[in-house]
Image (cartoon, rainbow over all chains, first blue to last red; front, side, top):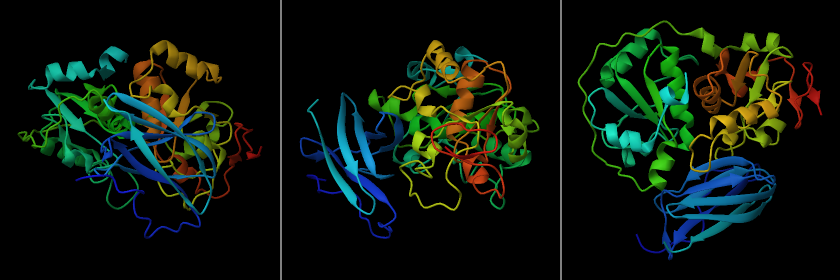
Length: 100
Length: 287
């Protein structure tokens, strides 16, 4: 596997008008990081959900409209990203981890 | 129960990984995680295929549990160490389930799969084989399981703890945010329930907070730990995590897990529901 394909998992089969999707890819040095943990925190910083990334570094959340923080955990790294989500659209996030 | 008898560290597991009487069991929401890799010598229990009745919404029978554990090679005297992903949600659920059927020595790996991975500890792909046993379970210990008819009488008299995320509690979300949101039940929470998300009991790496921090967490929210408590979430797995904290780590008695949880309560006809971020009165409503 080489290089990261921009964008998250395919949205085929999803009724996007009803969902508020935050998704993306975690990478390090341009290579996808599988098995990293991505946490979704609400606007008060409270934990809402967590997923491990796929072998291709991808993750996806079904959130609600508003402001969220994505916290990525991997061996030797923790990274926060602010995200604004709206209903009926897909927010694509690229998380690039610092080198170990 | 206490932290010493209910919880083991990753170091402890590495030291006891080859002990004959220690059975390491992975239980995940993502049941394919085990196939990818797992802790050496660990076997898998599938929370859906192995632990749920295939027809009605209930657990497998006592005989079914006995057959499951016998086929997995787990003996009555074995030390069962459970771990899994999602901060041990489903491993906690399995822990509670093992206790429900009377297994004596069951423990949770602190931090579960996540802590193990973040530590870059060894994971393998080969599958261990265990010799069949003859396992004998007890009748279900109903003192740790709450049913829907237990909820109404508890409104205003017992602690009810909603351990879902704040947005599920208020009614903004219907399911954890890694799942699609379209659901059949009503949004909101059981009136009078305090919102104490399961995640407040855990550190980022999935390990449990200290006993002092945990006690402070519940007492600061007005939970009287000398009173009876019912914990619930969406389907009973995150509330098993909180049941574990209260009953097993802190040694609080009379704590029950309501495994019907919001998918059952939020589908009941003519029961009070509360919307918004306040617990509300037993009658429910919109805050």
